[in-house]
Image (cartoon, rainbow, N blue to C red; front, side, top):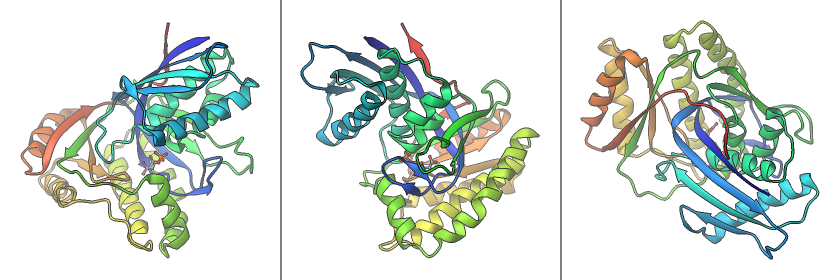
Length: 325
Ligand code: PMV
């Protein structure tokens, strides 16, 4: 009863920010992402009657108690779903820069959901797998699929209609996503905590909710017509609006560092000089820059010239879950 799965991470173009149910990981709004080809988690799960407790190794060493708790809680949900009480051994390898803002939770819980359900021989559809992965980390439900993926928030109280689906395959439209890694050691507010505080205290949060659906429709239209400029404008604006809701939280949350702002100004300058590049920022200081493949080298080199930029990793749309024998 053993299986291995690989999941790529994803970057949201329309952000998920806020839960309406903390236990089931139900979002306040729908979101849309691109699965990336360069960052992934590889996870092996084995269930066996001879095991007398769960163990979890992350990157070849025993995981911290905090990490164990999250993973074992998730495993309990899988066990409940499968009707088993068997213990498991989990070995995970993260090929995601662990610095702030490069969330490994999306690929981590997608790979864990896939490997654990396969090890238990549950024959799940991608929709069912996405629904389960969501309950480890919201963004993980999108990493089940490759390419451009939409997570529909759903309306049901039990979360049965809150899952992701692919809207365009990774082969259908190539765009470049440059992951810009900044020099920073800052400890961050977790996305779970940041969302909760924003929903509960930010007077700007209702403003976010009132425009996010329109942004989603706009991004889907841009994807449909492969209109990169139209896509970039709404992606950048959506990310800025999400960060604006956090600035209004009490106490305020500011994920950006000075290097983050340097990249923002740099992208604006690139556009003024005729290169279409757009940024998006998650719950951390690092920035992802979108551009067309024909411009990626130029954008890459110009980003590396900024003082606080440590590394730039060029990504493209990547695939969904893969199982290794
Ligand atoms: O699912 P989490 O806890 O990794 O939260 C993801 C939050 C953002 O990255 C900021 C937005 C998103 O949709 O991925």
